Image (cartoon, rainbow, N blue to C red; front, side, top):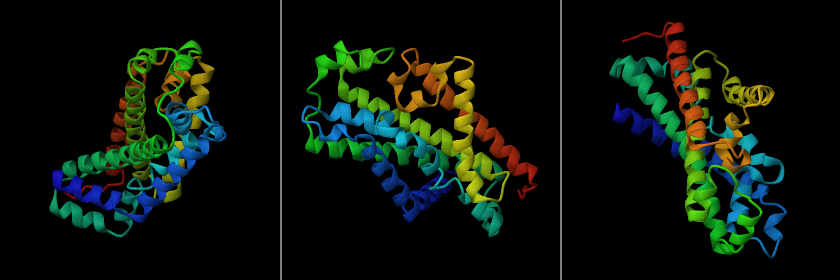
Length: 259
């Protein structure tokens, strides 16, 4: 199974589609820093939090649901359509195929978003001071809530935490795309459905006043003060497990049992 994961990851990460998704994510992140990037008093912390979803128009947040589908989520549809799936299943078991495809797809989505923010953080660190407004952030309660102690202990660790959450977020929503691909032959539906789901889920969470469960908290932890590491990681684990179940269900529902 490990060999299958390596093959899938190599195909997903070393491709023009991954590069396109990565560039799109980086551009969207830097767009989020406008107009703060032109301020003489800004620093990396301020710009990075805006780049990761708290900036102009939150374009990065809107695009994450889509770009994480690009590396591998639609590949299952391609394999099924060109009968390559038959060849794969003749070489391994159904269980190994399903698990390897799910794991590699999760990793590809997570790596895409985490690499995007690592590159953005690195570029910002070259041109701007890291944290010149620490006391101002504390007095203004910019990072108030559950994660404030993390920021107070180390702004760098806070940034790395955001990157880690983005990894889980990317993996979870890429998994949802993979699950959708098992019940449709349309790649565009596979790409669009996670975004539509996130919009509907957000409206529902707002309606029932459970803001700490908003998907946004996974990208901008300080957006909702009562969001915790358990609510953030918990919702990503649940979404991933539900997606895995749907993927397996969709696979067998279509009668694609070869081994």
